[in-house]
Structure formats: C-alpha cells, structure tokens
Length: 346
Image 1 (cartoon, rainbow, N blue to C red):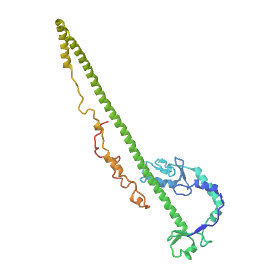
Image 2 (image 1 turned 135 degrees about the vertical axis):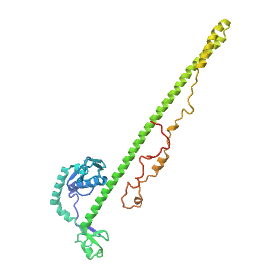
Image 3 (image 1 turned 60 degrees about the vertical axis):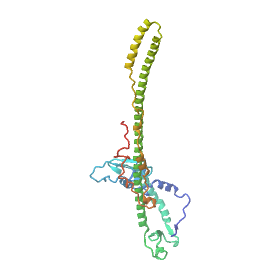
C-alpha cells in the first residue's frame, strides 16, 4: 500500500516548536508528558503514570497507595540515564511535581491548537491510488494502513480491516508495555551485576585478609628461627673460646702451672657440655601448604553461567525471565558446602 503526505512542508518550518516538542516527550510512553509530571532526583521527567508503571514492574510486591499495609518504599532506575531512584513509603506519590514542565506543556498545547491545527490537517496521509482519499483504516490481513476506497473497490476489498485510530492506540499501548518490561528486565540484570560486584569486593577483601594472615605467620616463623640462630651462635662462640683456652693450657711447660689452670678449664668444659641443648625446629616447619585452597569447583561453575536463553537465541520476542533457573543457585558460590581445604583461622 502506497501513501503520501497531502502537502510539501517548507524547509525549517516550525523547527523551534518541533524542537520544543521533542523535549516534552516521555521516554516511557513516547507521548507528550501528561499531568502530573514528576521530576526524578537525576532531574529527568516522567509522567506519574509511567513512573508508577516502571516502579510497579521493578517492585512487584510493593503495596499500592490505597492499601492498608505499610510499605517500606522501593527503587527503580531512570529510563533515560539509569540513575537509581530510591522512593520512600509513598512510592511515586512522594516525587516532586515539575510544575515548570506542566506550564510549558499548557503553553505549547495552546500554541499548537491556535497555529498548527491547519498544518496538522494538511499532514493527513493520502492514498496514492485514490489521491483524494485519506488513510483512515488499517488492513489486518495485509498489516498496512489503507483508505476506504481500497477496501470497497481496491486491493483490500476481501481483507479484514479496522479503524486506524483503534489499531494505532492498541499498538502504542503494546509498545509502551514492552518498554516497561524491558526497563524492569534491565533493573533485574543490573541487580545481578551489582550482586556480582559485591561478590568481587568480598573476594578482594578475603584475599587481603588471607595475605595478612600469611604475612603474620611468616613473621612469627622467621622470628623464632632467627632467635634460635642467635642463641646457638652465642653458645658456639663460648665453646670456641673455651677450646682456645684449653689448647693454651695444653701448651703450658710447667707441670704445677698446668695443673692449676687445667682443673679450672676442665670444670668449664663440663659445665658447658651440661648447658648445651641444641633446640631444633620441627620437620616441615617452613611449609605454608595449609593456606592452599582448591577453587576448581567454583571455576567450573562460573564457566557454565549463561544469561542467554533458548528463546533469545532463536530470535523470538518472548521476554526473558532472568530469575528462572537461578532459584537453586547458592550465592556466593560454595555457600552451604564443605570447603575443599581448611583455611587458617584469621
């Protein structure tokens, strides 16, 4: 079905109004903001209804305003910049209204009604096969807009049709719902990412603690071994000096002098021999093997994580339930299981 505009617009015509209109489009419903307009902490705007839809999609257990249950608030992400919006127990009704944007919308609509109405009428799509007929119906069989003459006498006379406005509103509602589903899905993915980032930070902290534990044990072992080295060194020095004294006594030519000095040297040798106690470190004292940990199970589990479902790989339009298949996965990995090796107590 071919159709064309019923006029040729002038270059640059109403460019300022069009630029203003683009700034007044809600990123959720893709329509001009409807009152009341709420302003998010990131300074972006949403229709209150659209904000409520996104909030409810991200917080399905949150009670409505009319509920008697006291709500604890919730959170969702701005569809424009992904900034996290945290709400109190009032939900989206606790967000501040943007009266400035609402006033601008009122002024824009007044100007549009006064000066742009003729142009809107001129912009009505016209049928190329019946040049004087407007595009006013939608062929459900061929899935294309058409005109009444095409239905009565033309190519679509045997097709099923519906009012163009009805199909337009239905499709726009479907697209708006799809956007809300995507935004909610993005929030769930972001929650999984945030959870994994927390796990990474926990692992880094655990690594730091383990490194500090290894360092402390290393210092303790080195301190003990060095202390034994110093003590045995002092004993060795005393024994060497005693050997030198004994040798000098052996070289004494006078028997009387030798007997006087040798008796004292012999006593010192006996005392040194009794006091000598060579303390040794245990076999394998230098080993740090008890700090080893087996992460093969965790590594294998991480390799099997796949966020792509069968429906996505086949190119279908079915929404992906990110929570499906993750209910039985313990987080962090290894929770509730016995560790492969015992880690030293911190």
